[in-house]
Length: 213
Image (tube, rainbow, N blue to C red; front, side, top):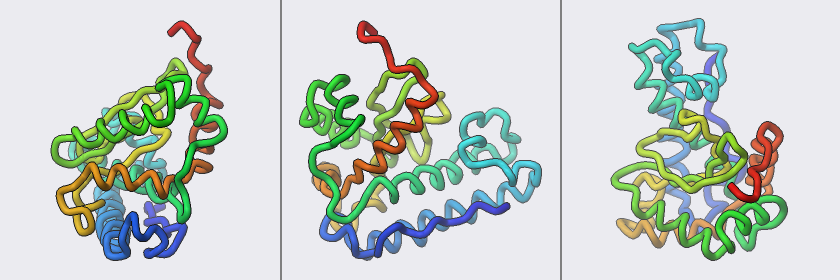
């Protein structure tokens, strides 16, 4: 089965003024669309891999044939990353986190304000193109991290709880070179319900870290 470009869960204009309509159309239709097209083209060379979920491919890149490994890493990563990105945003989102993610943030970072500042700083410091993440570790604890290009934490044995895209195509039409401004505004469209859903999926398979860790 070929991988497919998922439909946006809202209109192109739904995240205005944080993310403008033109950026959404280019980002979803052209950029994400290209990742899906290129991933499918690569997998045609190895039909036995076509039935695998993109998560499976990225979790063990060494098992992907060398002739398509880089293409799968870049385009499979772009597909997985963006499929999450659209879902963890929503119109009239943002505000203080609630539910289990609020507890994780408070326990790990001290306060939501401190978490925001560290998340934004990590994203601002990405050199070139990449992503900033809150990721779950195998021991059930959490960490902030960045990845270059379209790399996903799953390739490092981690679970992506939430992430923000800091490629220029995600913000440049509206914010130009003011990436920190985009990072700050992004919190106004965050979908905490979806992030809590992702957190629950992670915690279902990992024991919470002991308090002294």
